[in-house]
Image 1 (cartoon, rainbow, N blue to C red):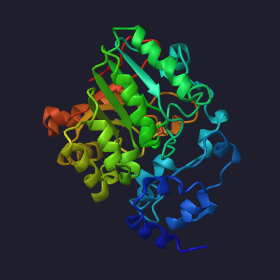
Image 2 (image 1 turned 120 degrees about the vertical axis):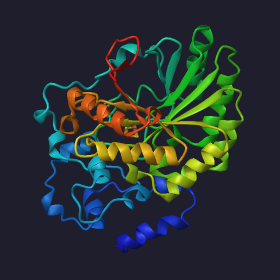
Image 3 (image 1 turned 90 degrees about the horizontal axis):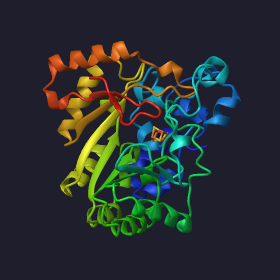
Length: 339
Ligand code: SF4
């Protein structure tokens, strides 16, 4: 087996994001070995990985601190037995009731005027707190022909003005597919905006290629990119360069985070995240309370604590650097903003 440290150093030389995506760390033993942590301290029921496999891209892994089980980046991807259903009987597999808002495969219509497309059935990383960890991607991965039903659905409803690319992670899909879909959508006259929710540029900054920028800036739809970063340490210099390329092309850049126990549930971590985002030209947008999906309870931070944290941020940051605390409620007409 090759030296794991060498594997990390080699990332700089790898230019193609597809190669990095094809070479994710999927074995917990390898993950821990690279981080100088003893796998014997992580007894893991095989069911945990069967229900939601490990996926960690090497550029993200390279930002973790070696020898630290509590590293906030590691905690987001580390599978634990606490995820097993037996430890969490109250939570549901579909906390946002998305199955009821799925009129056509590949499309979720939850809120007025906006539809969400599950453009890619996979991600560059598996965040252990993900609310779509049990989502039915098999039903929601249309081929080209089935995408036509999605396009027809949007074309029939003139109230829809915004399309949101989601997933999985939409930027885990290739640029040819994304450029084709975007070109098909822009022919619908009532569509105005294209919003992309993605964590891929944080995980694999090499994903911000000239091909990506070409379709993203070449559309008449006004693009908004909502990044997903939870901790300032995720935003290293490679990510800064990628974000620079996005903002140099005039894209509106926002960030949303999830409030996670042991990751960012303290004022200092949230302040550093907001400061770093702004330094890179990204506005903090939402701080989400965890969606109660089965298997994520160990990340939960109470609403009271969330409100307290946002209040602390208000005392220490200008208003535009304080994200809005939000919660999604199944069946509600909009996201619930709590502070
Ligand atoms: S990148 Fe987003 S969709 Fe993918 S696992 Fe993480 S939170 Fe879930």
